[in-house]
Image (cartoon, rainbow, N blue to C red):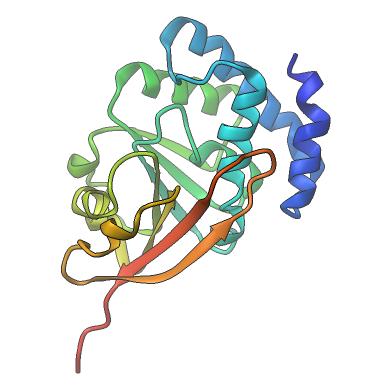
Length: 212
């Protein structure tokens, strides 16, 4: 079944300006996720074609915005989304997957091992308790929480010039009005995800400049 998805995935990779050869490790990840999902219920999406669109391509839509970063923390990553697809597509990016759920963390460690993802680290921890001793260029979260709550839980992980890159569907404007003090929106980027109906956006939030 997963080989049947290859042409669609390769077409999506070309749309994003990525190497179609990335389809092989991405499909390996998808096959592993589907196998574990049958036993451990890691994601509610079970149809492989829906997984391709809603998991792989949706995650990869934000790749241009992390391509030049050195470090990224994916908060509440679940089965590794968007962190693992981004790590596969961006081998120069060091990705830390933060997940408190034990069975999901076990899957993440197995995926890192099976896929030989040398640029990925798994942190089995609650976000607010995660103290890695360093900061990240960016944090991201996909379907985790509101923007204010993401910053409340994980803002401490960002360096001075760090950014929250949060994937959002429609109707997130109210969240922008309630950002914690000291944070501001840098940009809102519309995302085009092949095969996905509905609006997707990448919201870029950083620390507000300190008044002189």
